[in-house]
Amino acid sequence: MHFTIQREALLKPLQLVAGVVERRQTLPVLSNVLLVVQGQQLSLTGTDLEVELVGRVQLEEPAEPGEITVPARKLMDICKSLPSDALIDIKVDEQKLLVKAGRSRFTLSTLPANDFPTVEEGPGSLTCNLEQSKLRRLIERTSFAMAQQDVRYYLNGMLLEVSTDTLRAVATDGHRLALCSMQAQIGQSDRHQVIVPRKGILELARLLTDPEGMVSIVLGQHHIRATTGEFTFTSKLVDGKFPDYERVLPKGGDKLVLGDRQALREAFSRTAILSNEKYRGIRLQLAAGQLKIQANNPEQEEAEEEISVDYDGSSLEIGFNVSYLLDVLGVMTTEQVRLILSDSNSSALLQEAGNDDSSYVVMPMRL
Image (cartoon, rainbow, N blue to C red; front, side):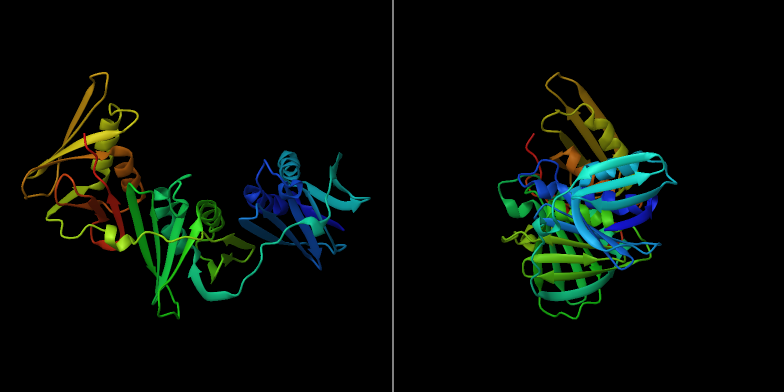
């Protein structure tokens, strides 16, 4: 194997692929990246057995074909440290990878390509083409609510649900829930649900950088595969039953509050400073036309904000984890937000004013 490539052309796919590779690996080959040259195309593959990412680069010069695996992190660090206009010459010689650029020379250890595991491809049961920007928006609006290292392993990921011409993403950690839907051309009438693990979702979002570009999604029984012009991403699915999210959405809340998103966000941020650092609780007191926000902590410090809102119902006092409210307001984009409440023991439903494609549920806190 022997090829030359511009540093910039190699660095971008290498950084994304190396992001999948785990640093601490039981199998040495898993900390390597697989390099394959065929014709005038170089492909780079990284995997941690859960998630696999393949990046493709067109080579400008004719190349000598071959395949080998080399330490991902070291190759990336070498590329990063070279001048931005460097031309890199890479060849395999006696089971070592020789990297040359200008006056720099590096020799890297290798492992045979045959040792490199490939994610088994099952039959794809459903394929759809989506705009990258829309899928990225779907992920960004919901991924913050995914659980981290929860024993209920099916919460450490995101539910993707496909039904007639709609793709929906749902994430929950048991204390809050985020849901967002988008229109999509899917020739599928019955509901199809998969749970994509947390790492898979975050890596997928990193690939969706072309606002004009499309991404092809294949949902198999055990895998999801996403293909853009330069990358093919595969992730195992989480085997488990996601909670029935429709039952969690509060129904029949009779208290509708309309408020300015930015003003609420700033008021919550200020009161959060003096909330209990561990529980992050704040108290909301709702009365006609106004919302009072209070926080206090074990040091007897207090914060209070008053903010005008559009509300004409009865008064209500309710507590929330302020971080959860700030997360929701942070992903919304409209000027006005809707807050629907029923009583101090029931979850709140937050939505953008005049836009129903996203819904957020936050459970109350006892203060």
